[in-house]
Image 1 (spheres, rainbow, N blue to C red):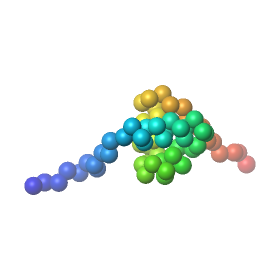
Image 2 (spheres, one colour):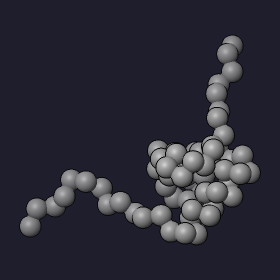
Image 3 (cartoon, rainbow, N blue to C red):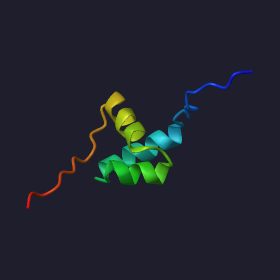
Length: 63
């Protein structure tokens, strides 16, 4: 049997979604949210974008 090359997609649970909402409302960075939920930053950004959840915009200061 051939193995799929695509990674296994883990569905978001209602609890994880609520944690995402709470952390985004608290102003946590997407990378922090991703670490706390055990997900990638693109997954967090995608979920937030899909559900119109505003994430903190972090930019680097110019020197």
